[in-house]
Amino acid sequence: MSIFASVEMAPGDPILGLTETYLADPRTEKVNLGVGIYVDEQGRVPVLDAVRRVEQALARDNLPRGYLPIDGLPAYNRATQKLLFGEGAPILEAGRVATAQTIGGSGALRVGADLLKQVLGANAKLAISNPSWGNHHVVFRTAGFQLVDYRYYDDASHGLDFTGMLEDLGKLEPGTVVLLHACCHNPTGVDLDAAQWAQVAALLKDRGLLPFVDMAYQGFDKDAAADATAVRLLADSGIPAFVVANSYSKSFSLYGERVGALSFVGADRDEAARLLSRIKTTIRANYSSPATHGGKLVAGVLESAELRALWEQELGAMRGRIHAMRAAFVDKLAALGAPDFGFINRQAGMFSYSGLSKAQVDRLRGEFAIYALSSGRICVAALNTGNIDYVTKAVAAVCR
Ligand code: PMP
Image 1 (cartoon, rainbow, N blue to C red):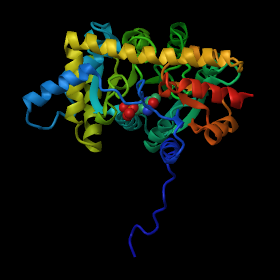
Image 2: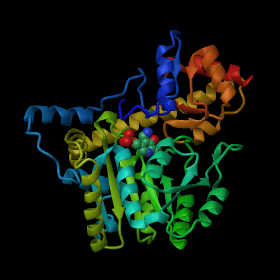
Image 3: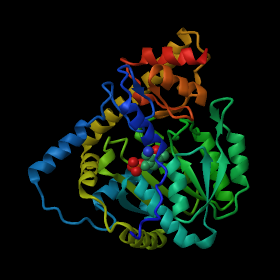
């Protein structure tokens, strides 16, 4: 008998399972609003011109494929720090930030979680927004953290329960890690404004909590600098230590290239140097070193003034299309006499909690071949001028 005979089947991923059902659906009018990636007006994952130009130069040079350093390409890490904190930020000048290229934003979360667990020991606790991206729970639980929720989404207003959030954060034990979405909260699309971030930063500092910011959608709400407001406020807040995981999967449309970065901020240059050494030993024990290709693409774009400007423009076009689809969704539903969906315009990024109930989501799928998550999360980027009339009519029908 095989030593694996007792291994049980793991539960399937609900989002990927939905896509499989969608692909098998024979109805030609079908629409998949359950996706977790940005697709363009034609429903395709875009290849950005800025990226293509670096890729063409790389193909021409055809350089040998040696290993990268454990912490990745130095140019990538420098460019990442500037994109997060801003060129010339005092925190960078002071040498307080230790950054390593990682395997996507997920790799940054996992390496960060492993390292924090080493530092915090048996009492490692993570506070997480309710709701949050499902993989957050999995990564931190697997790394050995105890998880607690903090209030975040308010069903009634389809907005932020800021009072509840402050109350819950205010009760956490000092030393608790607090996971925060920098912008374009997944799955709700509900974000804090700058004044609310300033209040949260002050609370975290007063209570000795450790912020861990996840930024997977920089540039999908406002421009890249504005979407980094939370990170930059923390940098200026006087908090001695925090962590940032960021991903280029969406902002560069480089999902499968697995490009992300982990930054630990310490109290001073010496602390940052020690943190970088520990980030490196953690990476070494996980996957040894990151992948070359995606890192070179991102660094190549961000290091060239011309390509960087082109990227900002292409990022702006993705963001603009998302905003236009939000507005069209709201306007068309209003014209159809549906209940008010105006809150969709106040949510940010490519996801929205639509407020649709599980029963309504089931009807959308059964009667109209429109697929959304049972939580009501829709990917606004999956809407386009070709399907928006069909989708809004169906949504209006299930709201009757
Ligand atoms: N954080 C959040 C909130 C995400 O939504 C995602 C991707 N869906 C990630 C992190 C991970 O990004 P990556 O694909 O780069 O691993």
